[in-house]
Image (cartoon, rainbow, N blue to C red; front, side, top):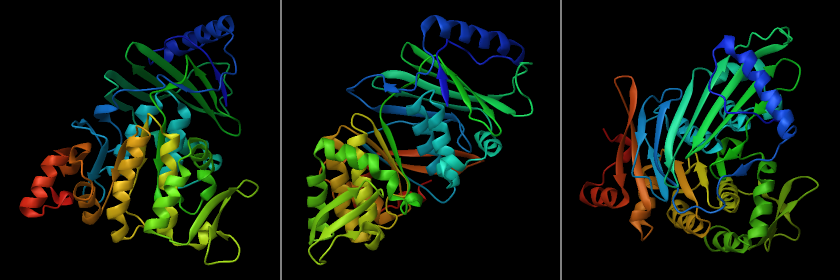
Length: 384
């Protein structure tokens, strides 16, 4: 995918797009920005993560406001209440005008490899306009996505499908990208710049059987020297005979050095609970000073382990200055995050509630939710 620089673009009318494209190219040549692929973050260190998020328009979420955000934020609700959609909205906001972030959301939801996405299906999945905003590190931020059709006569209409415009703002900075999607050829992106709000990592249980996705996270954990801490937790709570888990670069597989076996075993030979705990733990070093999003946190993890793993998640989040957004269908999981960790104020709890065709949020600080549990053993999933 080619990326070139450009000027501040607002979403154009179709009749204006051709002249704006010419302006982008002229400025690109003057700035010598052709081929820019690196994507940086605005700030290497932040004092405050997201303090609020508003999903103005994204799939079924329309005008959803989330406040009281803390270090760890847990979202519950009945099926089809928009929990996964909310995580995706946060991910898109953090990725700003990066089209690759949009692609990753779509292939993750569709459970298909990103290199096998049909381009027409890709554009269809973007659907209606997307608008998400929030306050990050005490600065206003937003992202808007719109699909349009260009009328440029020079385009090969037999191959051209649509163009996707993304406009992002953070404080005084505005970034825009326009991506042309084609059949049978690489898409083309023109961008003023591509900078992310922060590192952001998304974990889904649906890719548990694809360990190669975690190779880069493992490498970052090695560099940060956090692996001994992860192994110590697994050894104490899950697998007492564990010595080491190593990534074999040639095959992109993880091998477990276990005292119970004469030679290392593939991690896939162990239970899914161990795999998920290990893979989730790897994410935090890669998201330092950023955000980790965990969908269906309790998936494959035994109830007894959730109590202890919730405390370890909190420890990793503090170590790497990470804000966590996670969803859960389990009352035991939800309650563990407030009853098993000493600092209840580090948590916020939300029930996503469908009403009159819209989704709203019931919000509770950790202290508020703990008092409700102690008073009547409430079930966050059924809040109204």
